[in-house]
Length: 78
Image (cartoon, rainbow, N blue to C red; front, side, top):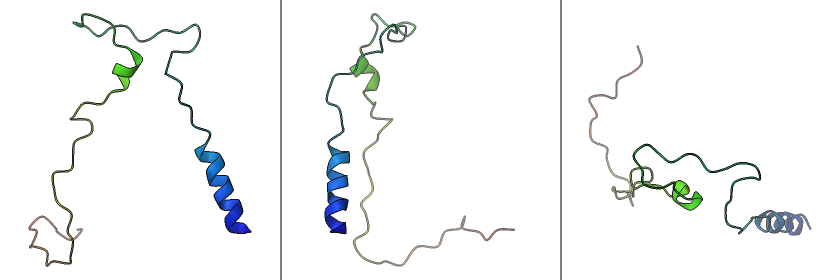
């Protein structure tokens, strides 16, 4: 019975998300256009992340245990 209640609660929490487009609250507006920009960006453009803000992983995860190389900067605390 406890598992059923846990799954039910998880389903309720998952269903409370909103799919409506983002708009500023009533009486408010989007931020002013950035200096040098030709137009004010939309809400979707303001939420889009650059490649620098969310870089892709460039290192491969280790699949098995391997001996670590000596790190000269791994010093004990003083």
